[in-house]
Image 1: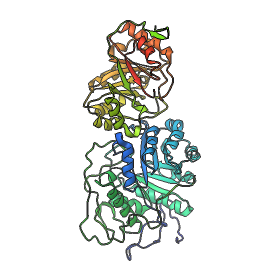
Image 2: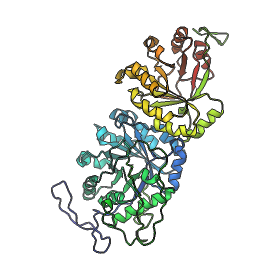
Image 3: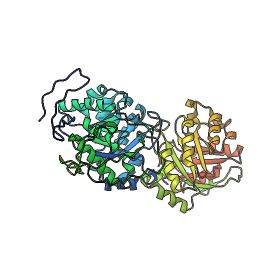
Image 4: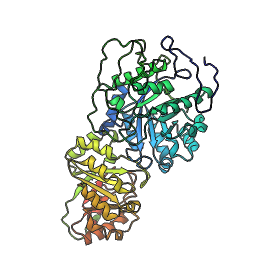
Length: 331
Length: 220
């Protein structure tokens, strides 16, 4: 049960501990935790075998697969369009997600195609429209829903949360970018946590059924923990996932840390403040350096090991106890 | 002009010695299995792979771009990659495509209509492509007169005469584009002339009779 809270200046949300992690350590997460979802981006994959790569991700236990559509205008990179996304449906039944890093013109002319390509049979596809690229965002989000998709809105790092405050009722997800989209090698931007917390506050206080996604530099370390702690529950990981020899290990590691963070066992930023219980035993690591050339995308390439020390078994669940994978949203 | 006689197209264009090649368009393949599809068409005897790159702006569709080409190159390291760039401001992707296709031959075909908004003029775009080690092609849409190419032909290795409105596969061949092919062949016997759009068993003769020697075959 949520405590009654008072808003402060409007730029931050006062919180009281609503659940306890370790004994005596207050959790930061506001509201009840929503199921963690691990959503790899296909950008580090072998694009000449995209179908097979999607199947690999399905076998690894991911909740969704994200396709980054870039049109060379909204971001200075060009990737692929709806036909390639639709072609992947033959290879996997995992729910799809398409992030439209495209100009308003492209979004308006091709939104129906993007939505149709992203929808799997019986599973509305998540279609993410950028607030910066859509003058008529309300109409765009409505159109996604009308096309049978699950609307999501994305914000670039510089964009204040207030830009989407009036369309939250239309969305199933909000994507907070934690890097500037379109470029590779960007570092995770830790100040985005404040934006996540603000949006989370609105969602909880207004009783909305909305997931918060994060994308950019998210790895199985303090980055995912910080985002989960702040209220995100959907984590888009590109290199953070494909760095693992065994993708299932990557999916599991990401999920474990995120769920632990939701319970107040967050690993704080930059290696400070180790959350998580225990840490006994040597960590089993299956990380390899990604040998294929990195593509420019909305993701960072943090150097150094990204595999955390294993926590106690109490936190090492591979699925959220609050439920199985999210299925179709209201359509 | 090529005219039908007894049901057969009769070649009316001047004779030329340009090599005729069939270039399968990867747009018609299973885009989720490009590596296997590419290997199959090459094994079947295709000379080059035709890659249709679209940016959703120059044409109202998006297909795939240089990152996909880079992945494909790893699987077909020796194939000639013929990149038809249906993009606005074509100079912006030259370096990226060069990087994606390196290792074997490649052609960067830009649209004449797209140069207007480019920071470079046609000569500048051509130079940029050559500086990056690729062959140069220039394309015109059905609505563009062949006269628009008069100052450009001498600069390039190939001219692509679109026989459909670019952006989508499966469209019907436009025979009224053949006079453009014939005009080019008549004036430039040593030029590679490519046609793209609706080419198949029932239309390839018309294109060849007009003087085209590079035939892009997609859905047909």
